[in-house]
Amino acid sequence: MKRLAITLLSVVLVLTIARLGAVRASDPGQGSGAAGSVEYVGTLLVQLRVADLERSVTFYRDVLGLRLKHRNDALKWVKFDAGIKGVTIGLGEGPEVKGSGSVSINLGVADVDAARRTLESRGVTFLGDTITVPDVVKLADLTDPDGNRIRLAQALTTGD
Image (tube, rainbow, N blue to C red; front, side, top):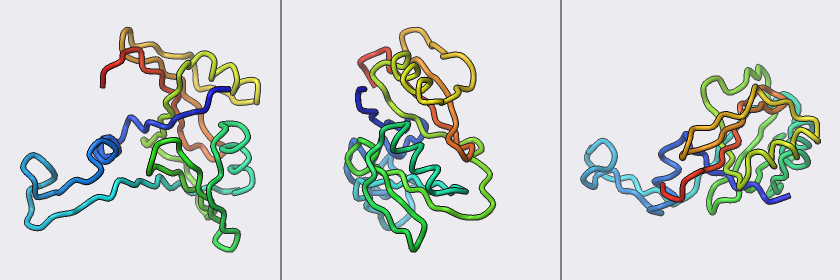
């Protein structure tokens, strides 16, 4: 199976950090224009609360195929390599898990149809049919065991 590369298309900040490496909020056209500056270091941790850490580790590692980077059993917390320099996904076990609401993690894949078949063979149920936006993107939605929304995205263009 081709390795999943996470693009997090819905978070514009990720794209800015990944491309520029550092952004100063006081630069023209960047941030709010407030006095002072914020220097971003080119890292992003997407952190999700989960009800059962072991179940979620199995899903993200064995089903999605992400590499477990760090584990702290005392804190009931793990971190996965997202496949993009400086971007990781953290999972922490905690009470009152309610899913991600309107937030989703977009996983960039080379072939949505092939990735979907692979994940379906591992027991993943998708949230409807694959959606195609002609000449732009193909999308397939699923959820993790805690209801956090995950979207597979295949770019159909070579531009940004």
